[in-house]
Image (cartoon, rainbow, N blue to C red; front, top):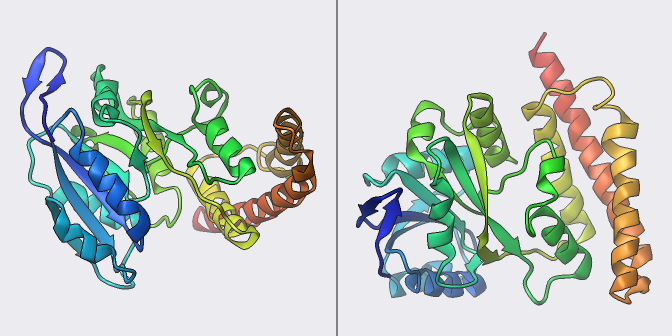
Length: 301
């Protein structure tokens, strides 16, 4: 791990703190740590492990990392992120976050990520995520749609992912991560930063392999969690929160997009799967969104 980081025209010889969050990722954490050692910028690795029981902890002593144990049953995303920001004693102006199952594609991942802070108004930068070779086609499509060259993001209310990202310490010191949200705590924090005048940057050249092959139940659960967080984080007009606008139209757009994708990929047999998958997505997200709205409306009196 070598190199010199730069902020503007100022040389920064300090190692960049990199926080790796892990939980039972024995098969993936080692390639991730190996790629961190190959980065062009020096880094100081801190692993925050959430009670792994699969042998992940046996791998960590093989690498120059500082291990922070998160006790069983105490993991709250926002709390762990805040603890990481607080406990890492570094005068470096940014803290980098990388999930243990996010493997940098090349030696320039960190350098390209930090380059996103070229403007002093940037509160956070996030990387491009790419599907792993074994990723199921429709989930691979979702990953490319969300990240890719970033062209789709401008049409969305907001986009960010903590899985491979960097946070400006100055911004965090005035506004910490919420400890009341179980999903999308990264979306919440960066959205609040934007409301205060900060900007969020996307570093398309900072690339990691990161994808999941969810079961229907897992996908629905995730969508439910994100839908609930959506309702709590953003303000919604009556039209925006309607079933037609928030649920049905996105479902139809997704199915149409999937149909085009599987046709081009000559995998038309996946279309029935798409119909079922997107229905599960719609139902899960609607359930979570409705719960979140109910909770938000109740708390607002």
